Image (tube, rainbow, N blue to C red; front, side, top):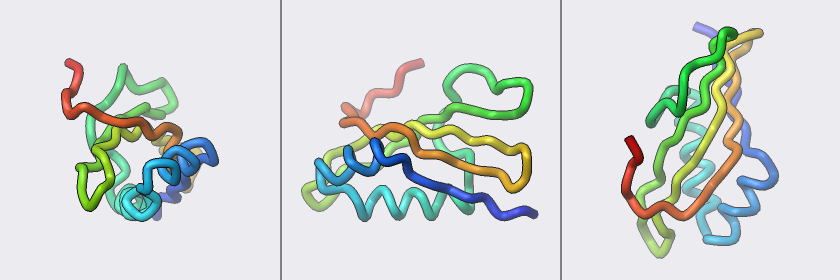
Length: 95
């Protein structure tokens, strides 16, 4: 299996820093390198296999719960994940 490359955009990193969640976001980034399809799929996958997904960082140690949106792109190899948005999360998933 090909390794997945996961990265955080500057905007997402800035938002995580603003709420003191840099370490939590880094932990998630590392997890997405192993399991790139966490959370829920938002919409349908594109014809090239790209997906927009949402997952959650649970609140802990003074860090609020956060919703994290990312894009998974399987082709061309190697597969990539780009964490694009970090926002406060109220814990309710939309259906």
